[in-house]
Amino acid sequence: MSEKNLLDQVALVTGAGGGLGRAFALALAAAGARVAVADCNLQGANETAAQIAAAGGEGLALRLDVADEASVAATMAAVAARWGRIDALVNNAGLYGSIVRKPFFEITCAEWDELMAVNLKGPWLCARAAFPHMRERGGSIVNISSATFYSGSPLWAHYVASKGGVIGLTRALAREAGDYGIRVNAIAPGFTLTEASLKLIKDAENYGVNRGALKRAQQTDDLIGALLFFVAPTSDFVTGQTLVVDGGRQFN
Image (cartoon, rainbow, N blue to C red; front, side, top):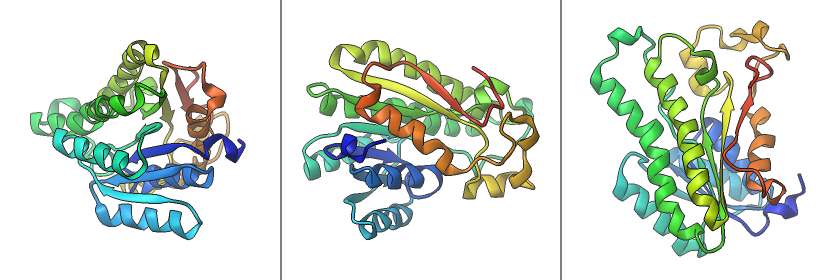
């Protein structure tokens, strides 16, 4: 991927205070984009922005609660005030590492509602708030789903359902936003070795490795190529698609 493809882009990455979001923010900055680093954990966002600055990039740390309409609106306004526009939105924020895995009949309504508010309502709120900043110039929205939607991974029905909803949202937004030159796509990662995954699954380094066509643990860097493809002009005629990146554990 040529860096010049992203030199004039302004990107907003949610959930960028660590894990996949941090990897996405750093990769976009390395490719030349100016990156707004948004997270409910402002300290983590500041750390990511500092890493971008240390590498010679331009980052802006912002506190964002994706489930809160006012917080989302304030974040979009802050990015537009800093750089004048928003070209790319990466809807990465989500509840994952804090989930207590349990049978669907033991999940409480409060647990279900909290997870849906962040994982599904959040991407919708962010896309809706970013739209006015993209409608004149076009842009790219990348939603982070999960390969668990395809596998039906047990003991976290609310998480799997939320990530399936993200794929449905991606398709619906692609239909509606296409008239404005806005592309909407999704990435469905497999089990990736992040800080959250290491806490969530025992022996995470070996979890599911034998089920993949490529038999090794998935790293955050394995998702960078898909992200840059969807954000860069090289995918200008691609929208409404979901790319599974999991080393061949699921074929779609």
